[in-house]
Each structure stands twice: as structure tokens, then as C-alpha cells.
Image (cartoon, rainbow, N blue to C red; front, side, top):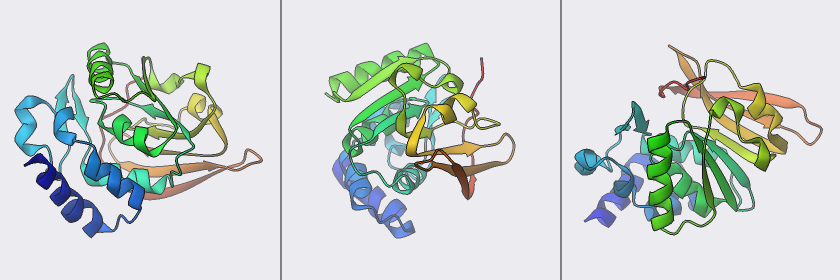
Amino acid sequence: MWNKRRIKMVEEQIISRGVRDTRVIEAMKTIPRHLFVDKRQLERAYTDHPLPIGEGQTISQPYIVAYMLERLNLKGYERVLEVGTGSGYEAALLSVLCREVVTIERVHRLAERASVKLREMKFDNIEVVEGNGYNGWKSRAPYDVIILSAAPEYVPENLITQLAPGGRMIMPLGRFIQELIIIYRDREGNLTKETLLPVMFVPMVED
């Protein structure tokens, strides 16, 4: 049952809307999203919506997740920093698309829950850490890719400094009006920004 729903989700919500990256599509077909949602939301696990996961946070809409992953052009060698672990679903997707994932979550209960879940599912290239996403995670920097699952009001300077030459960072940006942007750092360290599309994410909290 769940496998059929997952395949239908990918075909109707992701492929039909233009996502073409075969590695992203295969990851979305493989990772069981229903295992990462709140049990009260189980029947809605493969619908085209973000869903609450507790602590005022959500698991993102499947299409937006796939779109962001495709725009990162992941090849498999990358070290990735994810800001906003949430349920752990995106970290699980990243684990099969990249070499190494560091995922940071400020809410203790969510970090603990995701860590247990990912460990039980034997994702051995993911490290879940607790902290303020605005600070990034300096001890494992630099990162080839940084992806944010919550929206700051400005681009955090600490994340820029932890982005490797040749790296890219994708993030929702803004408070009341949000845009998805991607920032590229070239081999000389120069930054360029591209605005992608309007979005609506939970706000990124600065302690």
C-alpha cells in the first residue's frame, strides 16, 4: 500500500511538475515518507502538503523537497549541512544522494527523535547535532552544499563562511514574503545569488 502511494506521489506531484533528476526521483521513490510523519497524519503522508510534526514545525511539501534537491545538482561526493532536521526525512533523502550529511536541529525533542529514527533505519552517513542553525556547524566545515528547511530573515554570515569554494546553498528567505534562493560560491570565493520561486516555510529562530 505505502509503496504504491509513494510511487503515485512521485509521478503526480514531482515528475509531472518538471523534476527530471533521476537520482532525486529514485530517492523520493525509495525513502518511506510515512515513517517520518506524525502518526496522526499517517493517511496524509503522501499528499501534496507540508504536515505538522510537533513543536511548531513541519515536514515540507514533497514537491518542494524534490525541487530543492534537484537544484543542488548533487553528484554523490558532497558533504552537506542541513539546517533544520525536523523529522529527519530530508536528511534521509540526502543520505542516499551525498557522501556525508550533518543535520542541525535546535529543538531537543525533534533532534532526539530524528536521531533515533535515522539510526534505527541504518542511515550511517548522517550526524544529527543540536544547535542554532544561524551558527552552522563549524567543526565539520567547509560544506559542499548547505540546505535550509526554515526561513531566516537574512542570509546567515556563519553559513556563508562555512560554504566551500565551488559550493552552493539553497534556502527560503524572508519573513512575511518568502523567496527560495540559491547562492553559489565560485572557486575564487565570489558569491552569486539566484532567486527561484515564492515559498512559505516555518521561520528560522535565532536564539
